[in-house]
Length: 114
Image (cartoon, rainbow, N blue to C red; front, side, top):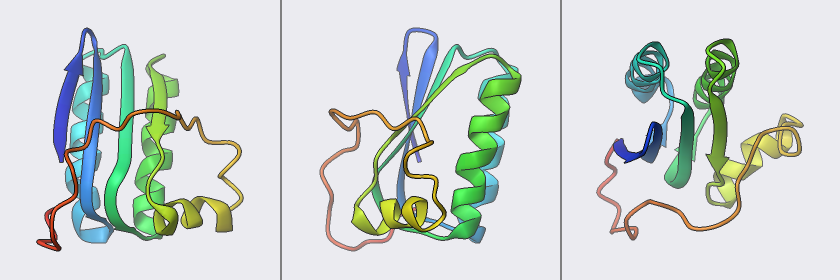
């Protein structure tokens, strides 16, 4: 996970897999940013190779926590396999996806970083 600061907002660029193993780190980072009073949180999913239902739970947790802290929340879409998780759960049209440039570095060969 890489963090990009933009004024008082934060973008978390997620890479590799968002699953049960990596979700705890993401949950801790989201909680800390919201407690510190970030005004905007963006989860950039564009560099993810895989996301399971636990990963989806973390995205929903981030959205809910941002609403609780009155922090703007947005998502940068992921690859087709990641977006399919949102489609299969009927969340594709209700999540705050932003179109446009990703902040993720160019994809590298399958080193599988989390």
